[in-house]
Image: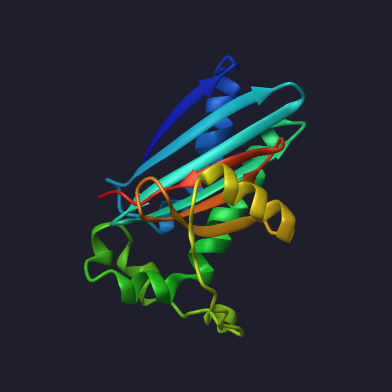
Length: 176
């Protein structure tokens, strides 16, 4: 694995780099040597955030963890990535015909966890009327939801607005 570390509002000391590499090297048993792992360490006020993104043939394996100690955030982010890999092993393999380009064969051949199956327990249908993203945010707030699917009145594409940390909103648009 090739680990690429970036720092935002933080000096990347040798101790931090070593901590990231020590923790993330535990993931080497899952990935081929030419897999890139992108790590961003950042500090915002009292929040010490560690983000890890691993591109894997059309999918992204990602985790972001925040605590008041950067070393704790690094520990947590590695644990979450490992849990995701174990939980979704079968899904990753079946959806990717060329999974061995990213994942080691031993990982792909390993036993799957029992609780792996994703079960959809409810289907909801609703009509969508064109609206602007700002109106969709208002509608989402009125419903008390964390996200809202709508048809964008400007682009006529299906979009999603969602709540972000810090009382801000995000907009997801399809690439054409």
